[in-house]
Amino acid sequence: MLKAKLGIAPIAWWNDDLPELSDDVSLEECLAQAAEAGFSGMETGRRFPMDMAQLGPVLDRYGISVCGGWFSGELLHGDIAREQDRIAAQMAFFKAAGAPCIVYGETARSVQGRRDIPLAQKPVLTEAEMATYGRKMSDFADWCAAQGMPISYHHHMAAVVETEAELDLFMKHSSVPLLFDAGHMAFAGGDNLRVIDKHHARITHVHTKDIRKNITNTLDRCRESFLDAVIKGAFTVPGDGDLDFDAIVGALAHHGYEGWFVIEAEQDPKPNPPKEMAIKGHKTLTDVMARAQYEVVG
Image (cartoon, rainbow, N blue to C red; front, side, top):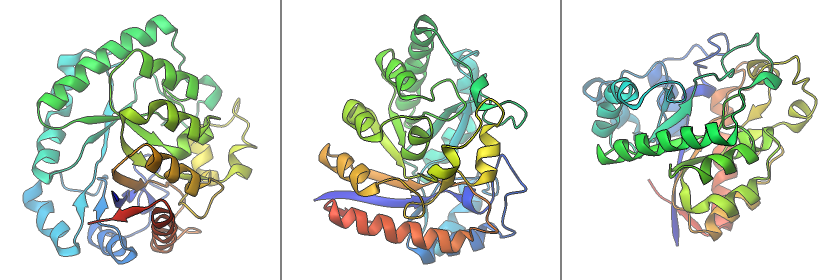
């Protein structure tokens, strides 16, 4: 039987890009709620001390482990030596925490954090530019793995690798491990099942983000930004949106994926109370996992 672990990201409690979309809870309360909902892992966020001497006892108190966390990469317009320096502290912390990977998100030229720039103005690379970028990312990923902490590449709305076609191109020109995010791929208009079929051999981490299609399908992408979409409620937890997680998880199981399934659903915590959303998402995933013949461990 395939084995899976269920994690969640703290972005439901406090948003790193939109501090106004944050619940007034401490790190300990966030961990307590996640544990009560049934999760065994949590990705890192802005209220996490990046020091296991401080964080370890708190995690142990709630039976939670670090199951990943974001790194804002700038390799698109930077060099590998600079990115090695920038990631060094997080790498040391994640190794001490026993994390499975660092989530690499390319932020160079991205408009994901700019509320004044609409989605339609995201960066676009030619194939030659993507090939150059893919080679740099591959070398960087190889270096990270050699240091004992692999990265997993997060395709992302408003970034240089957003659409299914862009992901195909990036995968063609790189050897980088992939973080598959169901919500971002659906938001970008891609076919999740086709992406899994094409790239399953490279998927090392999974974000089970759901979307509300009535919001993503009616956005004016020439006027509205990624952050506008988040504020409007584009994302939510599995079971609260429109994606078919039976089909998505079933496809991953068919190809033998084992590892973390992490809910990363940034939304306004006031109309979407994080604890209630965490419970709903966990129940949905647990039911889906059982039907896909996964054993949930941890």
